[in-house]
Amino acid sequence: MAELDPEDQKIVTLARSVRARTGAAEGAAVRDTDGRTYAAATVSLPSLKLTALQAAVAAAVSSGAEGLEAAAVVTVADKVDADSVAAVRDLTATGPILRADASGTVVETV
Image (cartoon, rainbow, N blue to C red; front, side, top):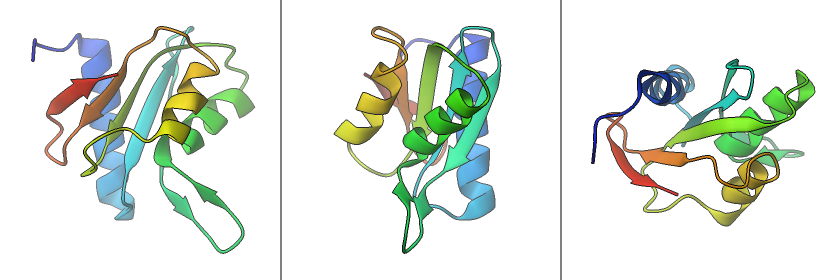
């Protein structure tokens, strides 16, 4: 895979950091159209379940973001799940969704 843009590398690093810090199944980060970043981990409570990307999108929207430039998720899964993709696509039709492994190496762009 080609070398990442520094801003895309930043969201991969944020996603990896939040995953490591929380011990969650996934970590994610998004960058809005103003360049602000939001990071989140998987939420798994009895009353609330969100993928890391859904949680990061929710954080962005609740902070006033109207669009996204890019998203990243660090996961051991072999694909970005449909609910996560749908959450990102609600705010950007074409922005890249970077899927990275636990080491932070991007293995796919959706």
